[in-house]
Amino acid sequence: MNAAIALIEDEPDIRKLLSGFLTRSGCTVREAADGIAAAELLSDEPFDLILMDLMLPGISGETLIADLRRHSDTPVIVISAKSMLETRLEVLRLGADDYILKPFDLSEVLVRMEVVLRRAGRTQLPKLLRVGKLTLCPAENRACWADIPLALTAKEFQLLLLFMEHPKKVYSKANLYESVWNEEYCYEDNTVSVHVSNLRAKLKKASGCDLIETVWGIGYRMKEDAT
Ligand code: CA
Image 1 (cartoon, protein in one colour):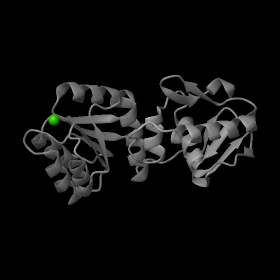
Image 2 (cartoon, rainbow, N blue to C red):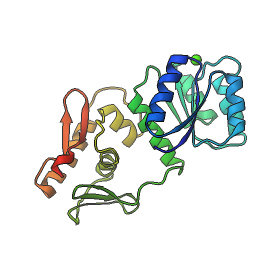
Image 3 (cartoon, rainbow, N blue to C red):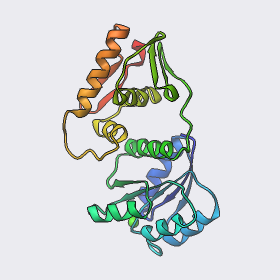
Image 4 (cartoon, protein in one colour):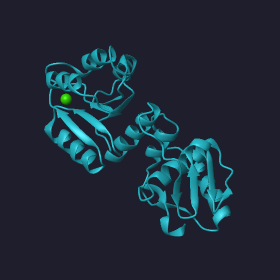
């Protein structure tokens, strides 16, 4: 992911973890370790996305978001240990785009960032994704196997889009649910498995092989060698 990120977090270990991970993922990261440095950083230069803790020395995350929203629509994802529903709703009401609870999963942070950036129109979806004989055109809602169109539901299409964007990545059910359904994954149910297995069946019928594999105990990923 090629994006300019402002990372606002006062805990050095978490800041280092996120900064290293995002840099390795292709982002340019600028850091602020307290609220005052954050306010300066944000007035300094434009960012594609802001990742922000709430409990910060100097100026709170809530105040930073409220100030930011007076003049900017840069997407904000809050990463906080504050788990009260009221806090989360308040922060979303102030103008944050998403809320991730600590402790977090790094791959979930990346997926949520992609979703928020896409929603904000800050990343261009590729015109055509290709994995072997499988092609997918996001703008036209069209997916094909060897040029033969696949009849997919909207959810199946979005699942396939995620798999094809990162063919090596293993997506957990929570990753998939939160990206495609855009709701918090609160309890284990079979919504994701049902849709993934329908998608798998359609891909198998078209291609004659299993294009998505189950990684036991973790989730699903594209089976690249089969395409
Ligand atoms: Ca903090």
